[in-house]
Amino acid sequence: MGAVVSPVPAATGFLPEFRVGPLPAPPLARYFSPVRTLFASALLALACGCADRSSRSAGAGATPSIPGGPDAVVLRVARDGGLVVAHPYPVLDSVLWRSVARAPALREVIAFGGEDGYLAAIDARHAAVRIDLRVGTVTASPDTGLHAITSADGASIYALTPSGEITRFTPSGGEWKFRPSLPASALFAQADGSLIVAGASAKRAIVWRMRPPGLEIVDTLSIDVGGTASANAAMIAATAGSLDDRIYFGANESVIAVRSRDMKKALDIDLGDAIKAIAATPSGDRLFVALDDNRSIRIVDRFEERVSGKVKLPSQPIGLRMDALGRVLLASGAGDSVFVVSLATESLQGTLRSAWRGDLPTVFADGTIALLRGNDVVVAHPETLRDLRTYAGGTRDFWYPMRWNGFRPRAAGLDQPVQFRTSAPRDSADLVDSLGGVVRDSLVAGAGRPASPRGDSAAAALFTVSFASTQNEKQARDLTSRIRVDGQSPRIITSDRNGTALYRVVMGPFATREAADRVGRASGQSYWIIEGAP
Image (cartoon, rainbow, N blue to C red; front, side, top):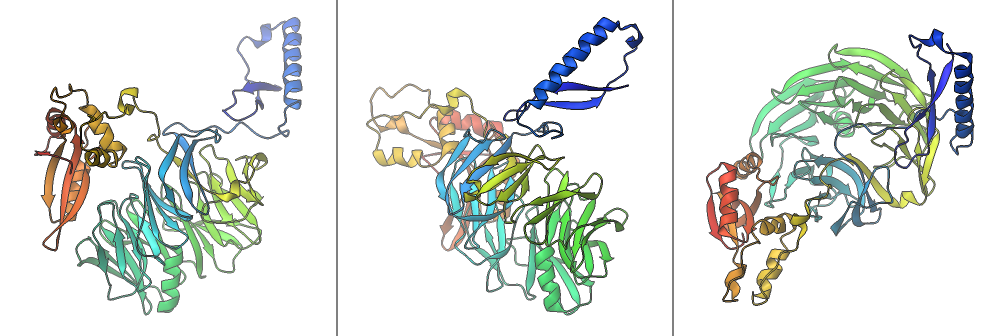
């Protein structure tokens, strides 16, 4: 049977394209008349003629499509700092959202927590930066020159200071530092709030677990890896990574994996050469390992606990970057070479030309690959690797593709501004307005009450829901994670009482006691209604 050319619906931002594929044999094909066949042939010729006139190169492949799920978004911010702008992908000339505060010059994103909308990044001063994508605020850690920066949810960020201390940067404030007895090389923030630390001593790799803000080491694991302490420490720092319940790193010539839940060794494979870089698939089933002075990538199967394959490359890979959806692996090669490795076939798909920095090249939601070419960002087709489109001057921005529904428009009623009585004290109104979008939405929920007939400041009275007040930050965070009302979670407010940090779990303020009481009842927790802003 021959081939048929059928039109494929084009995604927004793409030119119409035609796909060539085998013609299925219908059961009644033998009854088609010559006239009908001739008519079909004419339609084929017309379709081919349209494809030939397209600006697309022949054989460009099927139109890339975006998988279902959360919205595909690209964040962009000027590389020397500025407002963070969210664009819907692939229509990057539209704007979904802008931050209200300027971000510093960013180097790399390290974590994103979709539930709270926190994005954790590293700036040009090697300080930790947190961007709140719900209210548009940007905060940076007071410490600079940090390394081994890690976060599990974008909110709590851990790092090593130049002096060797472990520090933590949280939305609720409060300083926590810890100086380990053994020099740390890598940190792994865990979803349960614990912290796993890796370092080297003599010929051994040491891994231990802590539960901040406690200062005790809960569990320890020691692994004999050979080599020297300084070389192992440098390698651990360069190759460390975390995925689900496992952490992995290179030490001397071995790939090590440790289960974080019980601190047991899950993998220990000697590859015979010093390890240069490691990247894991999103599912964690395979590790791709680049070795020193070797023109190939080893594939380590987690379940078989052995080297299951090898991908030969034109030159030695220097850095590795995994596609978030596990379709391809990007490897930085000699000069401006970028090797594209297909994870489906575990083979080299092709070579692209691009510079390599903390944000680019990267893989977009539809599988296309964004590259750095001079002053422009060029997007390549995921299959043919041919250029699809160019964003002139795009290298002046820092890029971060993500999947999130948090930028979707809210109901119109939620976006009505809060109205205050003109006789209300100005500083009170300014205070409420400065509390951010989440608080203003809460006020709107109870803003429909009639104005006070007296026309005095009583019309602007505020009410806060308080769930707890504790000296234990972990208890406060645990309680916060268990409460969600109308899509919102409480926040933690830190204060000082006689030199002791106090953590308050609150929601609001609300415009009426009734609105505050409704939220308290809906939480299913014990609560108190406090008059005034928190």
